Length: 165
Image (tube, rainbow, N blue to C red; front, side, top):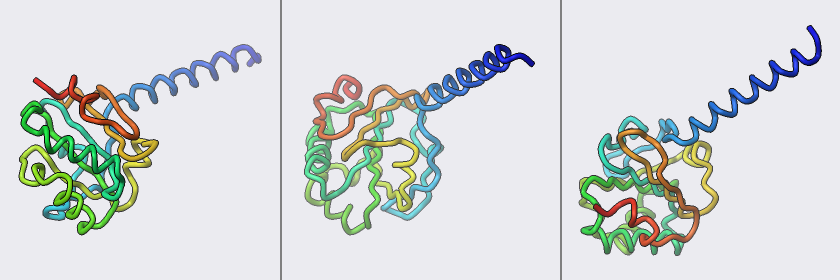
């Protein structure tokens, strides 16, 4: 084989892999190890709502910006589309999350479209590559495509265009 042919094959392979990665990264990563804080049941990507919008929020209950975001979502809960599902994902113990809910997100604890999930092994970090707390990812539930993401301090006014009917 000549050098040019090998080079062309290499480039085609490289471009194909890059295209495949770009397509995969625009969808919801296939997480498998989360558990629900309320009942301890397993929660995977297949457990997400299949209708409307899925909002995944990776947060630390002790983080000030995370507390502000939880409070803002809680205080404005009635304004969000009923087809919006919120998933708060933390790596900390249940006591820390319960304290967060009681102090900053009381309106969220009994909502059918809000779940608090535990990621005990850091799978979220590996699959989503968040840059800081909080990290918010908004996906179409039907297609699984990423609509928008936010890293760091963000108030719900940025998310409103995607979550209000």
